[in-house]
Length: 352
Ligand code: ADP
Ligand code: MG
Image (cartoon, rainbow, N blue to C red; front, side, top):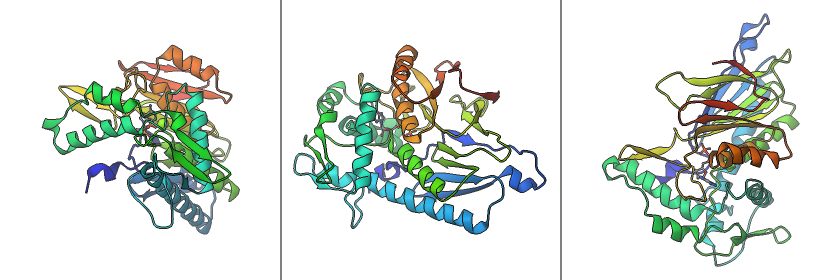
C-alpha cells in the first residue's frame, strides 16, 4: 500500500497553530481555564475547547457532531479511497475525460466556492493543480521512504503536467447535480481549502446547536464561536517556523474569527540541503519561496485557508493587492524567511 495514504486531504497532521487558553478570572478554576477535548478523525488531530458552564451531555453532543461532520467531509474530499454509497473526489478524478459524476449537493457547493476562490486569489489557489501536485507528492513520499534517493522533479515533467491544470476543465452542473473534469489528465486536489471549508461547516452546525465560548482547532484551522465568558478573546500562539528558538513567533488574541497558517516547516523534504515543501506556486511550479509562514485571520475559515495558501505564493506587495480585492475584513501575519514578522493593523499581539 502506498504511503500516500497518510497524506489524504483533510488528514494532514499540520498543527501549525496551537491554541493555548490562559486562565481568566472566575471562581471555578477548571471552567475558567476551559475544557479541551482532543480527538482524531482519520489522521487529523483536532480539538474542541469550551470555556464556561456546560453540561457533559451538551459537550458530548458537540463532539459527536464534530466527528460526524468532519468524517463526512473527509470521505467526500478523499482522492485516494472510495467509500461505499458515496461518489467523492476520487470518483470524480477517476472519471476525468469520461463522464460527469453525480455527487452530493455539499460537493457542488464546495467546488463552486473553490472556483470563486481561484478568481479571488488570481489563480494562486487552484484546486485543479492535481497533476502538478501529484508529482511533488510522489517525490516527497519517495524521499520519506529513502532520504538518500530524494530528488527534485524535472522541470519538463512539471511543465507537461501544468498543461492539465485549467480551472475551466472543472465543469459543475448544479441542476443535474454533477461534476465533470473535461481533461482526462487533470485532477482535483483540495488540500489548500478543504480543511478550512469543513471547519466552517462545523462552526455553522455547532452555532445552530447553541454553542458559545467554543474554540475549534481542526488540524491547525482555528475557528472560534463567540468569546470567552467576560468577553475576553482567545489567546493563540503562532508557531515559530524556526523551531530551534522559541515555540511561538508571537501570541495573538482572536475574536469571533478563523485563523489559518500556511508554512514551509511542516511537510517538506530535503535535497542537497535545500528544503522542498508542499505549497506550490502555480506560476513557477516550485515550492513558493517568499515566506516561511503566512497566517490569515478572517471570519470564514474556508476563505482563511484558501488565502493562507495564496498569500504564501506571492510577495508582500502582491499580497496587499490581493487583500484589496477581498470584501471581508482580513488580517495577516507574514513571517519572512529570515524570521521577520510583518502584520496588518488589526492583529492584537499579547506577547512574544
Ligand atoms: P496545509 O496543508 O498546512 O493546510 P495549505 O492550506 O497551504 O497547507 O495547503 C497545502 C496543500 O494544498 C498541499 O498539500 C497541496 O495538496 C495543496 N496545494 C499546494 N499548493 C497549492 C496551490 N498553489 N493551489 C492549490 N492547492 C495547493
Ligand atoms: Mg490553505
